[in-house]
Length: 382
Image 1 (spheres, rainbow, N blue to C red):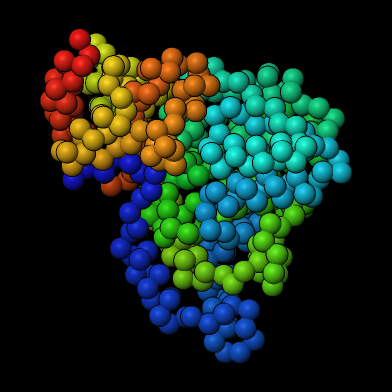
Image 2: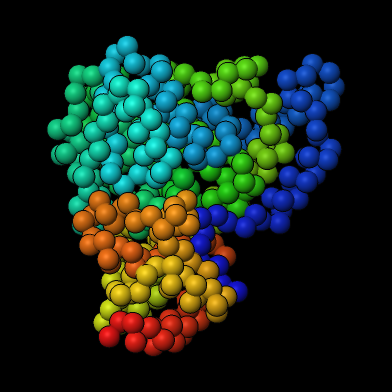
């Protein structure tokens, strides 16, 4: 089996699962309890927070635990709207954001907020000039993802941050779900970024875990009210076992980051250079530094994406149609649509997304299978 769908989810690492199991069994007290069962739970929770903060060079108080990327995106967007609506109701985002961001924005539009959706170029990248032109006196939030989940475009986060230095009252959020462990911390944690969202299951931690970086001093209203956990920003009894396991996964991914990125880049290049020699293949992801090393989106013109996915699945190679969150709905890839890729071609798009466990031998095996799959599609293509 070859698993090339790591942007959808990753397999939990054995030692991370072991951490979860041990904590769940032995440290099961409520961290908020005053008795002796609550104290070790609280200590472990805070140890996990410190560990993650230290790995990214931020303050422990700036790490807030959540259930994952979708919650984090919704919280920062709506929490900003609640906290700052008296100062303005204008928000700027891109036309290629994840559904968690797009749908949160749509909900705010129904409540009277004005959202500007920045266009992208033929590489799926926003223009800093367009963003600067879109800023208004009533702008309260700019939300731009670090790495596009469909084709891997890296957005100009640092350049946007430079523009926003002249607008210190505007919140700047980065959806960093696809960026962790990809050598992009200098973008995600650049000095003008106020919020960054992360999801544990994208880096071998348990599902239902995540965290948000919340820069000290930034005002953000909670979405979940209750007992005041997470500094009153995200109430609810904490998932201590999940957060301890996630902290271990963060440490592992950071330890392997340099070699993993180099390996993913080599795999991506080997596959891309092979399949682009075929007449009806279109590559949407490039091999330069403007794209993340782990995502390769391509299409076989004339063959629908789901047909390609199932053809490889029959040979135990697992990839996906663009975003896993919308693939079962057979929705057109929003990023490709924003790039003005013709609908018929966009419907043929599939995504390979790599992880640290993938190998060049798997790339060679994929290329061999691709030759056979492509030959089988010749009747459809020609």
